[in-house]
Structure formats: structure tokens, C-alpha cells
Amino acid sequence: MTAPRAVGVRLTYDAVPAAVRAWVEDRLGSPVVGTAEQVGGMSPGCATRVTCADGTRAFVKAVGAELNPDTPGLFRREIGVLRHLGEHELWARLLASYDDGAWVALLIEDVEGRHPDFTDDAELEAVLTGVDRLADVLQHRDVPSSVDLVDVAHVLGKWADSLATLDSAPPSTPVPDWLRADPEGWAGVLREQAALPMPHVVHWDIRIDNLLRRPGGEIVFLDWGTTARGPAWADPVLARLERVDDPWFDTSTASSPTLAEAGDEVVTAFLAGFGAHLAVRSVVAVDLNLPTLNDFRIRESRRMLEAVARRSGR
Image (cartoon, rainbow, N blue to C red; front, side, top):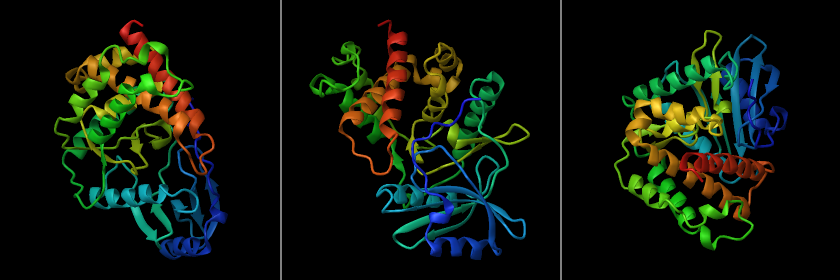
């Protein structure tokens, strides 16, 4: 089974402020007597399954600004999204939220299940089917403008800028020489996509550690902190990135109606832009309490750019 790739170094539940832990017990109505810390993800906050004296179970996410200044904002976005999306079997239900200005916490339904195995074709197919179903459901759910969703158009624009300026990036930027001149004009493709209407609510963070497979095989989508407005093809391409270094990726994208409609050039430009941006960030970003994030950037950038080379005959 493919394991989640740990990026954050998580706080344990017993290190969370006492006021937050007291809130958890108050909302659950029973003292917490057991905890199971979860690994993976990109947050330095706690991610803990808790069990109460009366048998009640829940999942707790909590983070403070002192751990990372950006993560509380992601948690606040997730709270707003889950409140407006309401309940559905495709995502874990929000039970309660906490925000004292410094610490933000979510109390979420504890979903029985495990991360899907992306090396198992049947389980991966279940994920892809779940992503398509999620897109259909989200078309009929509204998240108001008061919730600050990620703007995928802006993201694509930043990726285009990273591609277009690779020729002046530091020599240590881990990209192949052939990409530095953006030989296929992928930056222009991304800018064209960014100019199109983006009416869809998309998860925008489809990764193994944000997915659970229930005992019956159904997929549940977790971690809505980067929920965005973007193109219909966004989540389907993200769901396939785990195997982007396999020719399976090319066959799978070609057989997806949504990705086929977007076009092969758009998919390749997405990989080129994402990979280039991660590579640039690996030499300029400063990350607080995320000591393994840069290795993640470099590894994922390399996998995407190798896929670009394969797809473009480089």
C-alpha cells in the first residue's frame, strides 16, 4: 500500500493548549480517554482520533499561529467550507469548531477506514470514480463569497510566471535545462486557462493522505483547507498525480471525459507549471515548522517534470 507522505511534524494532542482540549471534551460531552495520532499531511498542528469515556469517537484538528502563521487560515477556510457544504457521505461531517484568535480547531466525524492503495488498480479506480462523483455533487452545493476560497486562476498565473522566468531563476533551481526556455509555450497555455470562467467549487488537494476508503470501499474526501474555485478538470488531474511517473497517467487522462475535453496540452502545461513552481519555491521559500516540505517540493517537481519530458518527447 502506498503510504501518505509526511510533510508536517505534527503536534501531539497532549501538547495542544488545555483550553482547546477542554472545549473538545465539553462538545463531546465526555472526557477523552484515548488518542491515536495521525501522520501525513502538511500541517504542524495535531491530527488526532480521540475516544471518550462513554465510547464517543471524533477526529480533532488544531493549530496555533505560533506553529505556522498560515495554517490557521487554512483551518478557518475549511470550517467555512464544511459549514456551507452541509452533510454528505463523500466528506466527514463538521461537528464543531473553535477559534480564539490564536488557536483554531475542528471537531470532525471520525470516519472508519484507511488510506486507499494507489498501486491497486481497483482501489485507484474507486478514487477516480469518487472524484467524478464529488464534482457532480459540488456543482449543486454553494459556498458563498464570504468564504475566501483559493482562486485557481491566480494559481495558474503564478505557475505561468514561474515557467516564464526560469531562464533567470537561480542556477541551483532543480529544473532541466531544456525547460528553462519554456520550449512549448506552456506559460501561455496556463494564462489562457486562467482567463476562462471558473465557476466550479473544487477540492484542490486530492492526495492519498486526504482520502479514506471505508470498509465497504466508498471514498471519503478530507482536508478542505485549500478548497478553490477552478476548472472542472482540476480535481481529476490531481487525483492522478500519484502515478504521474507511470505511462498509466497518460492513458488515464486520455480516457477521462473531463480531461479529454480540457485537452492534452492543458494537462501537460499543468504539469510543467506546477513542477516549475515547486522547483522555484524549493530555493526561495522559508517554511516554519515544516522541515520536510522542501524535500517534498523537489521530489514532486522532479516527478512532474519527468512526466512532461515523457509526454513531450524531450
